[in-house]
Length: 359
Ligand SMILES: *Cc1c(COP(=O)(O)O)cnc(C)c1O
Image (cartoon, rainbow, N blue to C red; front, side, top):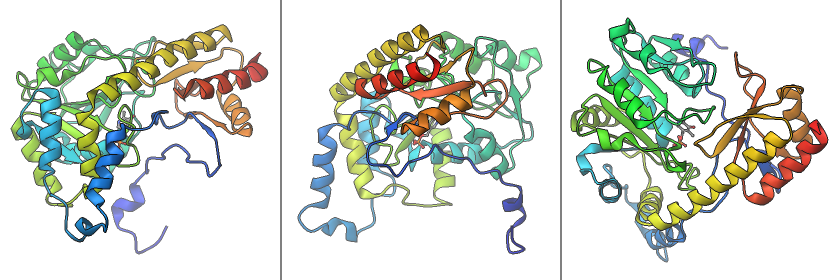
């Protein structure tokens, strides 16, 4: 606290990211990073960009990331003017709050969801109302429809949801988007590549739909910070206006080269995502056999609780063994743990440790 702080800083409640422990070989299942490396083409592209002397770094990068947007548009079968790029999808989401969700009515998002949303709402002075998930942690679309009294200045939620991993079928997503024609619906598809149908197919039909993606999870590039938004060119224009009033060069040269290469290697994405999904099913079954209740997951993590053991205590005991999972001290979910899918060795280490803790 300081008298030099601006008013808004006094009121902020910053997001707290998962711990990055300074250990040689932690079993790190707490931030949903991919357990596999990015496509080998990523390293080649970074080397090519640097060349022998890193000469290219003398120059500013392309401010509109033209090559990258073209590669991503091609991958998704859309036009480049329907693609926005930012420094991680967190930055893309932040711009969406300011450019598209700040209106005179409160926005809606689930009571259990990505905890960055209320943080952005406070940063940009966007009013919000949370809508309870049902008992199975599913989004009830009817609760978001203005026709049912849920008037709003916008809607935002992840699909699959975080930290539950629960996915809403595309037909239900469409019903929500179609029923909110007067406001923007932001769909955060950070985990879509682990088995959920993307709503990108809907952007041509719904000018109020913005779909947000990241390279951090399925493309193993959390360290590069590259995220996207897909939507009607007018929505993309709004994001670009905020971006160019904030930072014209959000993506450095290496990030642009790396992400372009990652999108050009669809086979790598398919192979690594499949491995993660297979490990997810094995880990879910192993947890269930130890007595955990596991929410069916469509993401690269599982959300589970043990009816007889306190979640915070399990997390602390795992930590002593240098195994890191995520515990949220929040209403309705403070007895759950969110566990990222690791390599099979990491999943086995977790299960072995849990056998001694809850067994
Ligand atoms: C991980 C995550 C993001 C952030 O991704 P970055 O691109 O790394 O900023 C956004 N939304 C949700 C729901 C996430 O879990």
